[in-house]
Length: 231
Image (cartoon, rainbow, N blue to C red; front, side, top):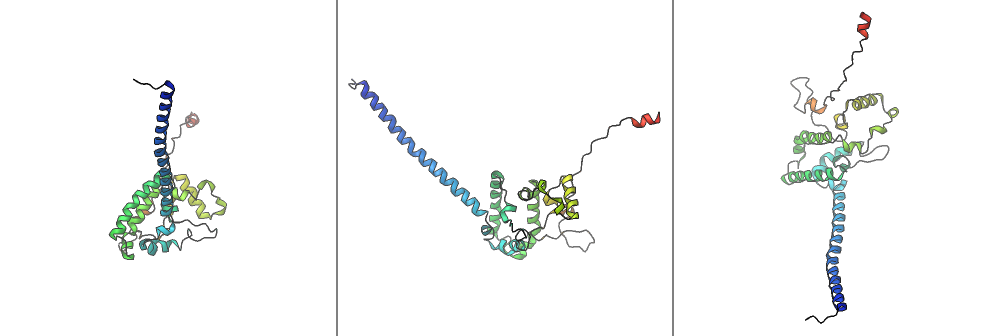
């Protein structure tokens, strides 16, 4: 028979509830702290792998494309604004960036295999590597270029006559930056010019310089003016 008074029963229940709250609070706080630490470490790792120092930590990059980059306007220019490797080759948006990081695991594999560990091997694969990047930038409408170069902010009065014509024509035809601006930073692979049979093999001209998308024109309605004139 229970001899405890209602007050004692209530106090005992309150004590049990307090004990359960303590037990639940500890793992919740622990999970929160671990979550914050994970996010901090994750972001720090992402930032570190986007640095120039990380990109050229392997000699395949430092001895090849990095040297080409150092002679480009993206490395040194009159305004002193420098675009590092990740500015052009890694999307800033979270999901596309994560996809690109996963794709980079294939590059790590080829680092282990030694696919481009000599200048000769790198040159042999230059065309393939270039086209892979051209396709990626074509697919995302040259988003990495547009992060810095906004066509809406173009001051055509500051551009040369040829640049103005090319930009206006490209914008009207729906072309994207990489359609024309290949080889801005890195040396171009051989391009097949098709001049004569003695030309060395290279990337087909239509791949290097794709034609502009066909423009759709609206049909002009017949106003009947000609019929009136004939009458």
